[in-house]
Figure 1 (tube, helix red, strand yellow):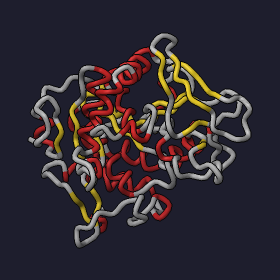
Figure 2 (cartoon, rainbow, N blue to C red):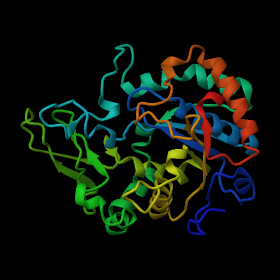
Figure 3 (tube, one colour):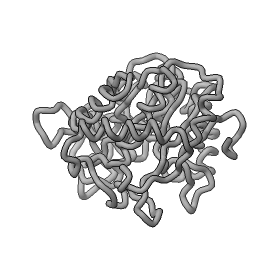
Figure 4 (cartoon, rainbow, N blue to C red):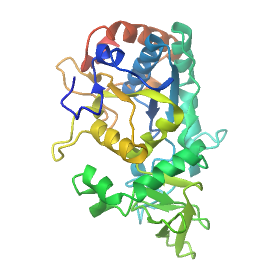
Length: 324
């Protein structure tokens, strides 16, 4: 078992997951559709399908399309790069799609079909924005916003030095948001923030937790308990803390989920992809394959999930890309 607090099951050893008293009917996995998807995303999806198949659970795949953190340095407003469109508000490169998030999901649909054909799992992708209006999801977000001191403590006191809160409203006038997040009022149930779009005359933006909002990506797992999740699968990059931080991403997720819901699922960490020398490959470093470099995604999905099912037998923290 890992060195994390005993109340959290966080492991890359599948035997430890099987030994748990799991509470829930699904295995959850998500992906952030910022830019082109990486082979590392596909490996995590394959492991998730293998885990669901082995445990006899459903696979809950969710596109984290309300994630605003990925847009802090993007260029919706080059002269003010903290003014941004959220994923569910952004136009896709291909105009036949309603949003860039929908396009990213469709790009990997052949891969998902390959997973389904190879294993006894059904993959039905959803979007985090679909949960807006869901009472349990809104209540979980409210619990976080009403306990910001505890939330900030999970980040070592560093979160509120950069952001107001992990939730941001969408301006009803211009449709843009701001990367600092918004202030929450327990009395009105609204998140309020200044609209920093220089072309907008509105001055401020506000909205309830059941309206269109963006969430900082580590808040996404507040969905898990309301969706009957027994195990959440993350990629290997969630395993380690950054050099300047003491807490890993997965431990932050577990603590935030507990803060929001008084419970957490078990967490399984899929392997990290590396080169032959063991150096991690990732989309953020522009290393390793992307989805567009794979000729037959459906066949690739069938082959990769078959390998992942075998790899579950032994704990693996890194996998050389050539083995995929």
